[in-house]
Length: 261
Figure 1 (spheres, rainbow, N blue to C red):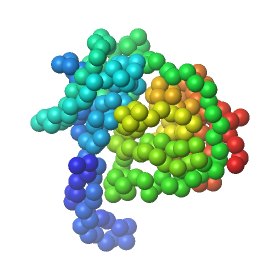
Figure 2: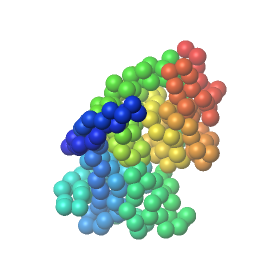
Figure 3: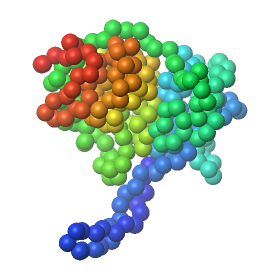
Figure 4: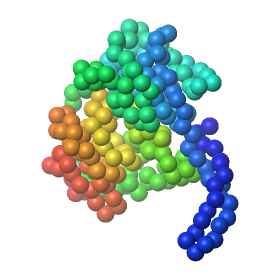
């Protein structure tokens, strides 16, 4: 269950006070295990864990092809959830030495040499229309049921070239939401095509890299990107649109590919 109702007290600035229970997003530890070997512990929302395990395994570069993932089994333990991933290849030596915080991209990486560098899908960027971006933004709020109840989770959505939201995943962590989305698409045998990613979080470099690994060449973010995210978008030639609002967006890379209609 991704949410739970907990008690709270509402205070208004005019002095009124009354009990007001709130739906709170559940956050739990998810231990990703390859065979019998623990690899990482990430804090995540406990739904779509199979999608998360598949997406995480691919975007972290543990495998180079989703076909190398033979299966995922989720076990409920006292300390949290265990996602046991069966691979057709041996998992890499790199390990994380601490628990990853909520949506953390690099927590536990011991050195720069251990930073994940998954294989990027090489494909040309495609144009994106402002009409499609506007359509996706207008549909976004209604496509986030968990956030509608809790107001505390991120969403990652895959949108068709005309802006229709095809798949959306939610999580307390922005990286986890994206891994869940990518995992869902890969499990369904769906590649990137000419669609684009719509993310409700700020755009950090890990999100750009994960998108590039999947093959996405356009990212639209609600919040602003970091400087390194822009650098990675330039490296991968990913169209990066951010500070997306209903009245427009800012293009940080790939402005020449944005179509007015």
